[in-house]
Every structure is written in structure tokens, then in C-alpha cells.
Image (tube, rainbow, N blue to C red; front, side, top):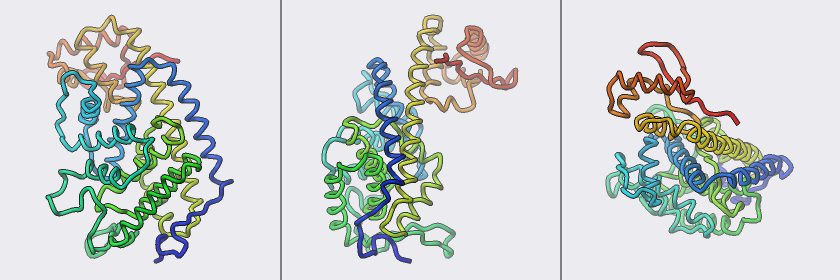
Length: 369
């Protein structure tokens, strides 16, 4: 099998502009439209919307790689690192601090040229603490003499899907990649993000963390075109079609230097991600209207539960709210929980999801328009 980096023309990618431009142009329109909608948000709402997107990106980019973080740990870490908490909130899983730091760094430094130091810092942030010291290259390009392969299947029956360039080529390959990235801002953002992601993943410069860093680079490309941090979560969209993502990457890394197929797929993904972000902003506006309507009529327990539910975002509170969950969140009695839930239902803040008695579940009733 011949991999893309083994071809004589590597890394001189080509593509059909007519096939790719439609998605790239549609994305640019959606991104511009979203900027107009965000202007209607208060500063607090803007901050909430940005943090919601950062939390989603952090959680989903980790899930793609098989690592799960609690959303509240990630949210607390982001807020702590941004200085938004007067008293720092507890983060139960310290590893969540690393992916939170990556999210903040991508947004703080998007306008700066990409550097080896920055990329290695990002890998260090998301990998540190996961391996015994000395067992893995952390914060530097990989150095192992063993081939860097992507494989699947049981031991003894492994299937090699891809083999990256050998480790001794990493300094030269990454120097060329960084030079290309910093000189390619004339390209449309969605197209540049797609090329950068495939290019980086084909090199696979790190012993671990390549996917998360590669997706961060794509976000940088989108942000640089806009002139401000991109308001979307690519990883949320990718996680919803993870196998398609891996299949598209596999085809792109094994084919010719004509990457039209990959770019059509990736720019379509970026477009869908931007549309999902618009739904997220609409959710923030609905949340603000909800508090305007119901805020004054809530007791402290009800407000705490609703705040907790809102932090789950548009996907909603998993399984809905029950009396049992209510008591756990507020540390109140079952009778108090039942009474509070009945009041929320009566005032129109809640709606029933299913069943009755012990199996009754509730969700928030958000205002329309």
C-alpha cells in the first residue's frame, strides 16, 4: 500500500475548487450571520455561549479518542482558568484541566503564527499525567524507532489502516507543515482547515494526542479567517459521525494528492457544525427568556436544579429530571422534591416526559421564538 506521504509530489495537495467552494461559501455566510445574532446577546450571555461551546468541544474531542470527561469538571476548570470564579470550583478529575487549557489557548492565541512550541505545549496539556514518566514522548515530536501505525483488530489479527512517516522525518515534516500553515491564509477558512487537518494527521507527529491537536489546528484556521474565535464545536459534529470521520481520513491518507473528496466531506462537516452552533446561540437566548419569565418565582432549590439542567446545553439533561435526581442535587427530602417539581410543572417551567409516580420525568419548557 502506498500512503500519501510516500508519493513524489507530497505534500503538494490539489483539489477541484468548483466541487469544494459551495460548502466553503455557505459556511462563510452562516458564520457571518451568527456574528449578527451574537450582537444581540449581553456580555454575560456571550460568555455563557462561548463557554458552552468550549465545554462541548473539550468533551467531544476527548470522546472521539475514547476518553470521557464530566462536563461539570470541564466547565469548572474553564471558568477557574478564565478567572470567572471568585472561589475556584473543585475539579474532580485533574486531567480535565489539560483539555480545558487547550480550549482556552486555542482561543487566546488564534491570531498568532503557529509554532512548534505551541503545538508541543498543546500536546503536553492533554497528555500529561496519562503515562508513566519516560514511557511516552510528551511535549515533543515522537522519536520511537517503531512505526507509527493506526491498527484495528484482535492481537495477532491486526489490520494496519495507516502508517505515518518515520520518526526521524518529524522535524523536517513539521517545519514544512508549520511554514505552509502560516503562509496559507489566502485560502478560504473551511478549505484551509480541511487541508491542515488531513496534512497534520498524515504526519502524525506525536506519540499520542494527534487527533485533538489536529482538530484544534482546524479551529485556528477558521478563527484566523474570521478575525475572532470561531463560534462552533467541530468535535461535537465529528463525534456524531465518528466512523464517517475515520473512514474519510483513511481514504484521504491513502489516496492521491488530489484531496477533493476529503475537502468536500470536511467542508460539509464545518458547515453543519456552524449551523449547530446557531442552534446553541438560540438556546442561550431561550435560556435568557426563561429566566426572565420564571426567575422571580423560583425558590433557591428550584433555581439550583434549573441552573444544573441548563448547563447540559441543547442536548438536554440526560433522562430528564426526577424526584430522585432532584433530591440528590438539592439535598432535600423526597416530599420537598415532589412539591417543588409540581410547582415547576404548574408554572409552565417544566413539562412531563413520561410515565407517572416514581417513573415521572420532567424536562424544561423553553419559551418559543
